[in-house]
Length: 57
Image 1 (cartoon, rainbow, N blue to C red):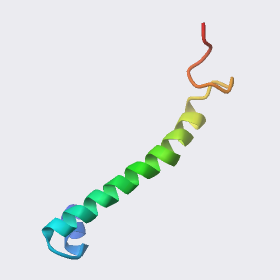
Image 2: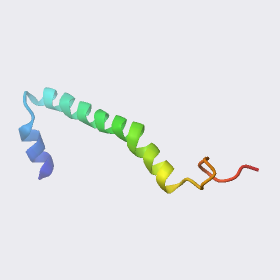
Image 3: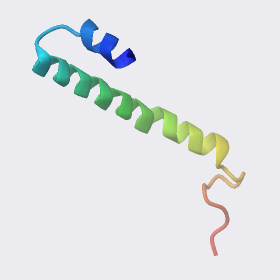
Image 4: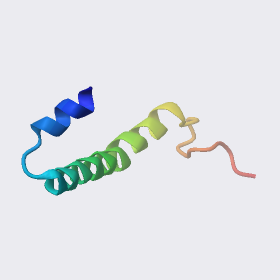
């Protein structure tokens, strides 16, 4: 139901809507990759040594 509402809100013919949706998905993935995933890794998986993953060797 939410996808149907989103589809109706987008302008243009179907192929333009698909391109817009692909651009939005790509943008969300870039934001996650650049800011969200590094923040989560540093916040929840840092062991206090400044390296992620624990002691080496």
